[in-house]
Image (tube, rainbow, N blue to C red; front, side, top):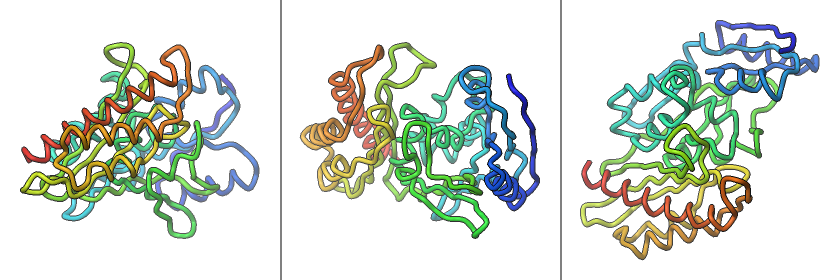
Length: 292
């Protein structure tokens, strides 16, 4: 490993100041939220010197609010802590299930959804699940901050929309309306702790007559970034979430996908699998919404 500096600021302003100073000097700085990706990278493919900027000590990044209209999840809250919150699990079961897929039990004690998002892997499980529930990034900067939908945050493989002097404080998520629910499914070659070949997150609202009045669909591991698929949501809205609607939503996901072929799956296979996952996730979300 190379030479590293470590700082753990006590305020948001201090974090922004450190980021801005390093940007001006050309020195590298890297945020540590959970560190589960960062430490692996430092030990293997990326040993270059840097300053590690630990944001785990900030109250803002550890904030968890479940309000009447909005839910706020701080960028440094471990997945294990979120999964233990029963109210959050009842409101956002699909997102919490996606979070629970990040690594082993030991890893989940450190890993965060915010870190998973900023790491910007095409196969990041929480990202399509965040997209499905309409999550918005709360970004801190010297100008007072800005908001950005999750589907616009990841800009490429391993890259995101954060500019110099900015970092992710947390995620703002609309509190689900009555009779709404979400679900996330992925396909992996092994039974656990593997990288998704394809993933799909779906949220739906189901009226008393069984009609779907709102939907969002996110897909992952089938393009350079996780994608919002409006055409899949349009196929679901206005339907009873019957087989025809589910089939159309799946076909929209296939059409939106632009995967690669590798040892884990071919282009054709990934396009087929993401459609299946969309249909199944939509069905699960429907059952949860009706039951709730």
